[in-house]
Length: 172
Image (tube, rainbow, N blue to C red; front, side):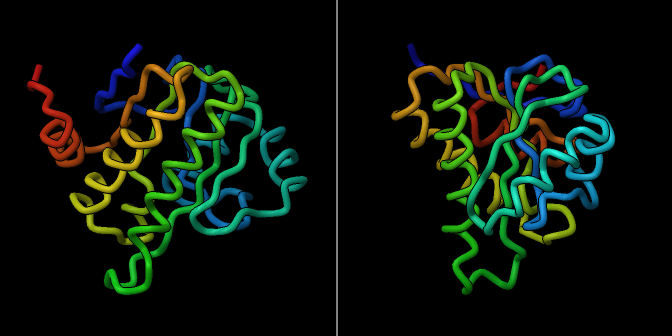
């Protein structure tokens, strides 16, 4: 079965998917943007579980339960801070998406939603990040037969237009 990839404008904390991906920082203890929103919506149990994980390196990902979220799982992926493009940022960003798909496959996840990792306070150029994200996910899905529904969940019309163009979606 071929996975379906799509984009939608929504609050990732409300999506009824098996797993959501958190654009986390290395501490995994919450922060700004998507990370803070996920921690607030999931409740205090998430912070306790994240403390036990003892952080995560950039380009890697770790998984926790979804706690008070509709999603059963949260995959915390640590994206790179944009430093101009000559510090290995593209490879690290691609690794976030690849590792998230690998972890999803290992945990029997069928549906997963990704935010636009690193494009907020980390300053990654949005279109470049979206190209990397869609390419990395498409490649990783070849080794993840259980993951069959991928949503790129974005927070702005600008981001939605970028993802829809890259995914070949028509505007509805």
